[in-house]
Image 1 (cartoon, rainbow, N blue to C red):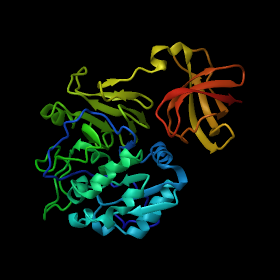
Image 2: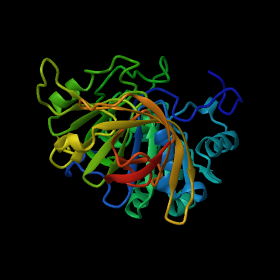
Image 3: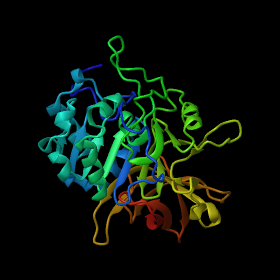
Length: 378
């Protein structure tokens, strides 16, 4: 592994590991819902474009005030100046403050947490999550992160930065003299089972597809049936707000303590939404009435342009049949009246409205409501 900040390394979200520590209760006993006002952006380890773009949009765009936390990474690979510059470049924002310490007394100091009081977004990078818990669990840092959510801000994280957002911390075995990174194959490590609890009553795993972790959360949910297990593919993420989340990128596995065929989990696909309060897949207009949206539009290029009436996304994509519609698949140029992410591979349900008109179902980049938006196609 190269030191952070070397030109050939793009490290945000790619430090793939796991772990955590705490003397607190191993899980919160609140209802399983996300922030009432703020947002969680939880990435499976690959930092796909849509995760990055939605995080930045929710934090305020290029003018966002971002606090980046690299504490899950080994000290030898942290160079604060280079790390901050890298995060600013990758996210496309102007202001990034790096927050890092392993001293809990410093993590409780007023001066150390001051940047969090003014931040609009916090990004927690990958590595070993037990390092995050050792440094910040129960400190002013954790309290100010939660305060940011109460102000309507956004907390994002990838890999270890995803798992720490749950209330029960999986893969939390801490480092030892013989194994300083800890053992990330241990799902439940007594004394290291508490996360920040930003998503209550949850256990979050990552890198699921690339590391064959599909069933790893089963034993956690069997031991703690009040928890909801969320397993994220490396190329997947969830956007959490209030009582629900929706999936972006790849698949997300739900472990709810029930049997689903031969497995104790089931997948959610990109674009699907989940009701955290009732622990059910949300029924969308598409599912209820597919004949109204018999086509799909999948983007393969896109740019955003401002307009008098709001954001417009211009690009190209593939318009193809869905649910038996009679249409020859074709590549189209489009201009849609919604701020879509760039290229996420998600097929947007669509219907034709005249020879050059299209309506797609989508979620605006800074919102979570699925609704219809008009497009022009050529």
